[in-house]
Image 1 (cartoon, rainbow, N blue to C red):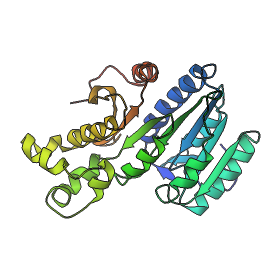
Image 2: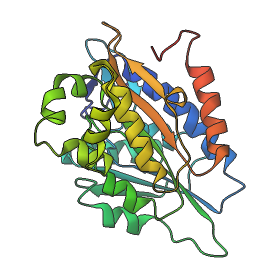
Image 3: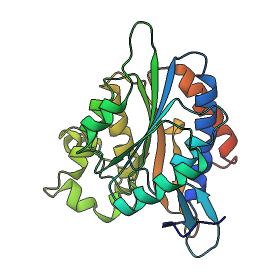
Image 4: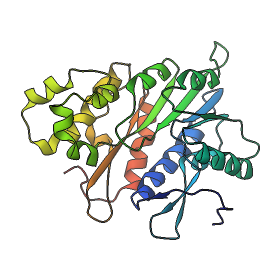
Length: 275
């Protein structure tokens, strides 16, 4: 692939698993909902540059915005938010080259700060216009803000969320559990999780799964269906097989989970990934 001299961030080889799953789900979602909703909107809160390269190789990967732009049945509108100006500039140029006809809103800034601008870009639903959005939440660590998702959830919207709690949760365990850090409080949208963790009395190695379950509890409070661990994708590092993150769907509709189950089936080998 010719990157046309545009910035192309490097990612670990595990990113290929993530993007393969996202590509499958975007395809099923965009086509499956095409004739059931008047408008389908795709939102990417951490959009990036549009392409990435696997670290130490010449292998390029489509980023989540480009994957969404190139589905068989494109979304009616795209909203891409990116905090880094250089990455957003590269994304704009790639979007113009790949899908010049697409209806795209580019938002420069931190998605948590710019949430009202993002919400204003979502078309208003009415009795004669049904609007369904799919939002990808793909932060670099467990620094997402639950209040941002709460604000978005006032619209009819499904989320695919990367819960980056693997290395972060293990490395900073004492800091999160015993310290004064509010990072996990902000990500989960509550301060009671420490009490529940201490009451559970399980191994420290179970902390990652506990946080994923706590996040699901928070999403349920917004009216989303329960997402158990066995309906998530656990992605591991290629080199050392370390647990990196969970990729999870949150929807108010079982139809979305039917799509998701198909994605998990076709993107995963037969090994047990949950041990």
